[in-house]
Image (cartoon, rainbow over all chains, first blue to last red; front, side):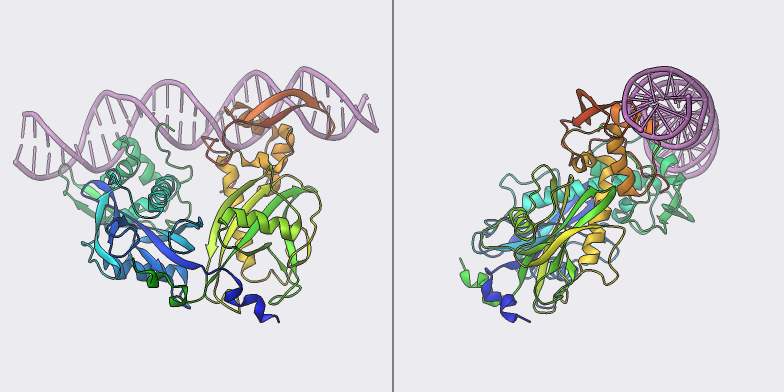
Length: 239
Length: 239
DNA sequence: TGAATAGTGTCTCTCAGACACTATTAG
DNA sequence: CTAATAGTGTCTGAGAGACACTATTCA
C-alpha cells in the first residue's frame, strides 16, 4: 500500500462539474433549458444548468440535484443519459474544470424556478440561439446534445419521452418533425410506428384534441426506450 | 470576480484519470490491451491502461500519453474516441476518482512494452476473459467499449482501422465476423462494401495472401470513418 | 486434379416512399 | 357543406439475404 500515490496534493487541482442539456418540445418547437449566470465568470450570460459534484455523490445524482437546485425541475418521467465529458485545460478561466455533460429529454414541463447560482431560468428554442452564445464551451455541448437526441430518435422509442403520458400518432410525428426539422408523410409514419412491435401500447381511448377525426391514444411501449427498439431504424430523410 | 468560489479547497478532492479500451484484431480474434498492475490497489490484477491527467493537459492527449508510457504503443493509424466517464464514489478504494474512458481501435501492433505503473502488458482475446476479472470497474468499461465498437461497425467504415493499410474485402469481412462473432455471406458482403460510395478505394494491386484467386487490394476510403458512411447500415444478423 | 478464395449474377421478400382513397370529427 | 386530421390500401423501386455459377490461384 502506497497511500502517497493517491495524495491529492501530488496531482494538479481539478474540479469536476456536471452540466445538463435538457430538451423538451414546447410551443411547437424543440427548446433547451438555460439559466442566466449569477456569478463570474460569464456573469449574466446564458449557460446550461450545472455545477460542482459533492463528496460521495454519484454523477447522475449530482446532475439531478443541480437541475433541481438551479431550475426547480425534476426529470421524473423523462430520460437522463450521459452525453460526453469536456476537459480542455482552458475551458474555465479560473482553474482546471472537467465537466461531465448529461442529456435529458422531457415532456413539456412547468416554468422553471431559478435558484442557486442561477439568476434566471427559462426555455429557449434551439433554432433561435442568442448571438452572443452561451458561457464556457456550452455552445458545443448543446450542439452535441441536440445531435445525440436527433440520432437517437432514429433507432429508439425516445421520441415518446417528449410527449405526455398518453399521446396520438400525430403528436408523436410532430415531435420527429420538430426535432429533425423535416416533414414526414403522415400515412407512412403511422404505418411504421404502429407496425413496430413493442413501441406503442394502445390505451383504447381516443381524443379529438388537434381537430379532425378522433385519434387513438397510445402509451410508450414496454420496450426500454433507451436501447434500440426500431429495427430497421426510422431514417431521417435526405441524409 | 469572486476567486474564492473557485478555491479548490472549497470542493471535495477529486482526481481525474483516463483509461483506455484498446482493441485490435490479432491471431484471428478480437483482443484488448491489458496491463498488470504494479501498485496497490489491485496489485497484480489485470487492468486497462490509464492514469492521472496532468496540469494543462487535454484529455485525449493524456490518453495517448498514458498508453505510450504503460505499453509503448502509439495509435498512429488507429482511431481514438471518448467512450464514457465513470465516477461512482467508491470505484477507487482510496479517494474519489473520476475516470474518462477512451476507446481506441488499431491494426495489429507490435508487442507492448510495459512501463510506468504497469508490471506487464499484453493482448488478451475479449472472449476469453480471466475469471478474477479486471481491477476497479474495468470489466464494465471494457464491456461498454466492446459494445460501442460492435455498434459502430454497423454504420461507419471503422472496421478498416483494424486492417493494415492495404487490405482485401475478405480481410475486412473477417474483421466483422470476429468483432460481431457471426458468419457473413462473402458474396453479399462484397457487393455491399464495394457498392458503398467513399468506403473503399481500390489500389489496383492484388494479393494472393490467404490463398485462392488473387484479391483486389483496397485502402480505407476518403470518407471520415468516425462519422456515418454506411447508409443504410450493415446490420448485425439476428438482432 | 481438387481445394480454396474472389467475384458476378439472379431471384425473392421486405420495406420505405409516394400517393389514392375512405373515415370521422368541428364549424 | 368544407376543412382538417386519422387511418388503410396499393404500387414501385432499392436493397438484403440466399445461393448458382464462373475465375484464378496453390498444392
